[in-house]
Length: 461
Image (cartoon, rainbow, N blue to C red; front, top):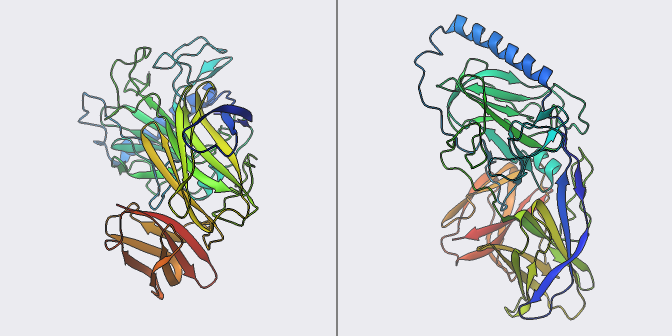
């Protein structure tokens, strides 16, 4: 998949006042991706030849491995998950489906009779692309999207060791990934892994459903971290695992529980000291995130959406430290449907803003999303190096586990008013904190080591 991300600044979408006045207009920014040929036909033929060679070698070692075939195709779980300890609301959007209109050059048709797919002059997209977003390169660097086996199978092809931050599609055949064969003879293909992340298992080894295969990256024909997931039946014919009125490849779904066509949700909400959104291909983004502000500084509040549609309503409520409402307003999207987009507001502050923690609650499509920011507080944005500290489970109803790569000197728990309500001095790399005694709500956990300090938002159920 060739991808270039374009950010269009489109202001202003509709604002409806629900209570107090809105702080500013909404700056709406849809994300679009340009696509060209994903897997060249010649390279596909090479892959099929490699698979046949591998299967012959497997049979020499284990002659019965492909016997006792089942007569029914597998049912898949989603072929990826978030890494352990990931605490944000979301991390990906689905950009491209299988193209069911075999006519090339812009003749598009997905399984649901829409155009959530692409083609090129001589071919059609043959898989499903799950794109890491927002901050795709940062999330790739942090190993956020783990690729897993969608169903039990045998590894019949495996590649690793190739560059994983490609930005130019030139027919590059050097992908990292895995191909599995399932008990009925069907195959699932998993492509574009991060270099060095591919499973340590070898060709011929079995994997269980949900077992780790690798990490999403941008190796091969790719210009953004994503997973290309492709399915073929036992005869080698292309399958679209999504059943729908315009799927002419197969009549039934290959999912245990088929995901909806549109999944409108907020992936993350956050406050920043700049409106900039880095989009340099292959470069780890600076989020410009900030939790603590001084009076007179400008707050940029951003919402990152998946599958936002025309007419969708987002309610934003901001409460002052004393619990009274600062703002309560509706944002109505009057733009076309987008698979990914972000909106930001400019919130200027001054010396009339009271000190303390402000609570932001966003309601979208029946779901509630929360974050906080502070004025003259000690809140810190969590800017850890990769996997330095893990806190889980989150949300929690009783205990949280805190794991660090170095000795933890202190752990402090703060409420949303910025008050320290608990302090622990573990002097070890691993510890637990009892949250059962805390009231239901959002807390900040500050983890200090010798030369680092990280703050995490924890939800107490």
